[in-house]
Image (cartoon, rainbow, N blue to C red; front, top):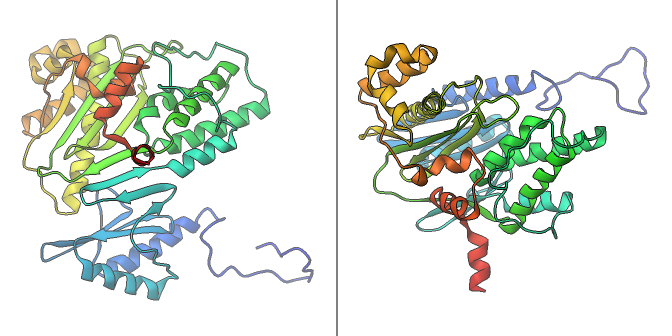
Length: 390
């Protein structure tokens, strides 16, 4: 380590005993030590998430989820949770903050029926930092039918480019609890290398939308039946620069939204059916990961997983192996989905386009359609309700 300012002595250096931040190998070394301690106490590392440690005992389960040096302890085995905290306190300097209320910028509020996750403080801080606390509010994060291109507008200078990149980076983190801005942020993130004044105006519109409901978040309620259901959609050739399609999917566990994504596909699709099929394949991959995660914590699913699709041609491709010659260019995805259908893990029901929840993740919608889809995602503004009651 370099000597601290003001200390001058030849032939001397500082000996580093421990460090978590600063060195590239510090996080790896820290996690390896934590992993050894957890495994020595009977915990196993999750297959679906390596930062999750699980211990099952007599039908009860104890869970530890790690993010760098922040941890969440939960599960049905209260006695084991207490013992685990005592063991960890002997190995590390710990501070127990009690029930989970705030974690990495995410606020958690509980009730008898469920909980709400939001990033209200993070959103308000972002609006204050960008000077948009008093800006005009918008009802949608992106205007209906908007196609943003890399060629529109004047490229920003280095200072403006850095400001744009910082803003989009913070918006990306905000999508952890705001699936309603996921598509808009996905579009904005495609121009990080050369943003223009038009792209900045689109980012400001997202801030105006956040100003409208800064406390909106995700509502999770208790359900009697635990099932995995997904919705996938694709905007065929939606990117005007590359003509690649945009994949959007959202996955519900027991009626609660747990996974969502909006992403431009890596290759061009030659038909809308192919674009939809690739979207289904990506969504099914996430569903299988979620199933592995549930198996790790001892939860078994009785019903088949469902992935709703609004393209009959894509559904027929998955269910009819006779169409082999027409699908050579999507052969891997075809076999991947077909194997899941044959193993009775998955079914692909048809859903009308107007009822497709994933539409909000693939394109800009008008106000009525946008609000309809966002309500189906289970979004809830607890603060708006409290203000209305006051």
